[in-house]
Length: 486
Image (tube, rainbow, N blue to C red):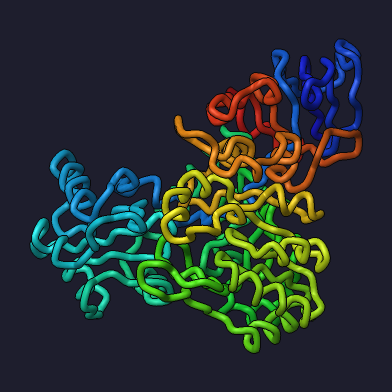
């Protein structure tokens, strides 16, 4: 039996000091200080920190996030020219190996005064293969040499949506062993921020990837393996159902939801909206019309796979809600960034979870003001969804935002991440609700709970949003075993 005693922890927000006993991965007792003396094979001293349910990143792309952590960061670029200058400055300091693909990530071109183009990269780095990923992963900016590398030609080298994703898959990548090591390092860093589980939305065969990794070493955290659209037939043939525990991974690997795309993204102006974008008059890209979406929802649901549909623009959300209503099944809508008021109560009425990424709101506020003018009071509408009875689950969408739940919690509560006033503060949500949404719906600690837990160095309830982002994590425990100790 695996026994653990957590000493000197305050159970819940503003909670009393207590000792918590864990046996075989389950909380068996919450007692007065000193009552557990002599009980545990292992003891963790919380030093008066606050014990909370473990945090779950409900939407991340783990292989991309682990690679992003090693790419040249371009998030500070305010123009295409500036992005190239940042790239050049990094390469001047660390040139890399001759012939190596130069990879940058994190640019946001929605407000740029100039346009990215392959010739900008060619002039700066003649003959070098360069691949630059946007922050939202919906745009890939390639140099002429990088286009040749994947056997393509393109007038601008700026690939969007499906073209972006297929080109990404064709680019040279690290070896499987190198990728697996990078993913393991990323999970360790996530554990250091209190994360006990991640829903991996990587566009790959995540079941196969995690089964391979688990054969080498059990995962540090719980992983839910999302099924990509192109693997639906394979998943059905294998008998996979959402929530099933996979044989590998010591019980920490499960089958996740089935992922579909209804539209694109705000920064690329491919999020599908009812009203046109002011600059080009387009309404975005509807990836899956109603008549195609409904049979996919029905087929997945009939085989026990929970559909999770990416929908950002308000029209994409309307189409997706209509499709769920016709299909007669539950599921998830991922992002739900812009909603018509009449669509907000439909989430609860249809039994749908809104998988949201509050850290995107401070990042996108200026882009939303420019491209969704007159509509931003219904953008990232977390309070409206909560008040309508919807279930919220918070993710990061890493690498679009860092895999750090406290960043998302702070954004949900504060609606800003800089010195500017909160953006539409009427859509902020209480800390208790944000913590629950970041913990897979868990709202407290009780005997009989699975011992996926986090101990924070301070009580979050007394902190400002800025302090929440920097909140130290003293311990993270998964299935009763410490996976991070400060």
